[in-house]
Every structure is written in structure tokens, then in C-alpha cells.
Length: 148
Image 1 (cartoon, rainbow, N blue to C red):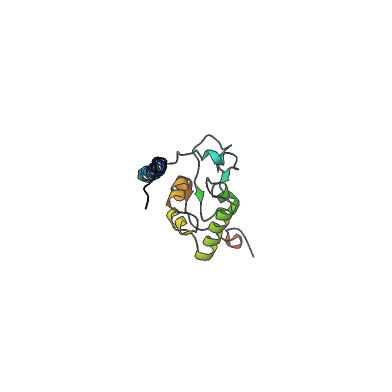
Image 2: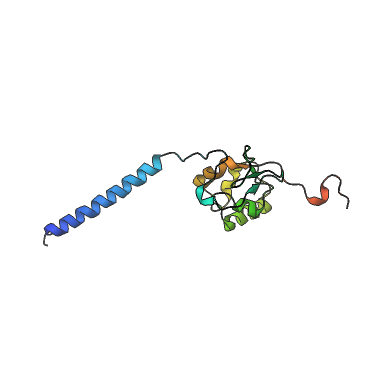
């Protein structure tokens, strides 16, 4: 069996160095804490998203919202369109959240959102400051003042 030529050894050394750099970078990223969301600011990639209506109160959060402190989006009352406006949540994931809520009942806490397929700790922490889990919405025919 022949030994490697000097060029082959240099090539192998470059490959090993690149692998070591990649592994070191991955370890460095894994050891850093997730950035905490700033109250009232959303991910720049969601800048074009529509404002979110929070709990039907008429107040909004997101781009174009008033300067007052934003309200949190209630997971038990939010529509798929409102959930879609959250950073990192697209229409498919928003539909999964609504379907999970309909199948398993209301969310008792925002952390239960991680039970939805496609939402892990990293994506949850990105939107956690924008969420709340209030009491479930009452059906329209049982609201006070409504008659059947």
C-alpha cells in the first residue's frame, strides 16, 4: 500500500480543519442562550406582516401598531390569520395550532404550544413574550344578551 502524496496530505488536512471549524461553530452556537424578544418589537422578517388583534380588544401589536405597550395574543381566541402574523409562524403552522386547540381543548399556558408539531423550544422562545393563554372564547350563542 502506498502512502499519501504531499498534495493528498494537504487536502486531507484542509478537510479535517474545515470539519473541526464547523463542529466548533456548532458547539459555540449551542452554548449561547437564545436571544430574548424585546417587548413590542417583532422579528425583522415579519415587518411586512399585518398587525395582530389581541383577544378581540381592538388593540393591536406588530407593525403599524400604536405606541402604547402591546397586548399579548391570546392562544385560545386567536384566528389562524392572527397566529400567522407572529414571527416564524406561517399559515401551515398557524392552521396546526388552531387544529390542536380544537382537537385537544384550550391551551392552559403558552408553554403548551410546544405540543404542536413544528414548534420546538427555540421557536417558542422567539414568540413567548407575545403570547398568553386566557380562558377559552365563549360560543357566540352563549354570550350574555344573546337569545336563541
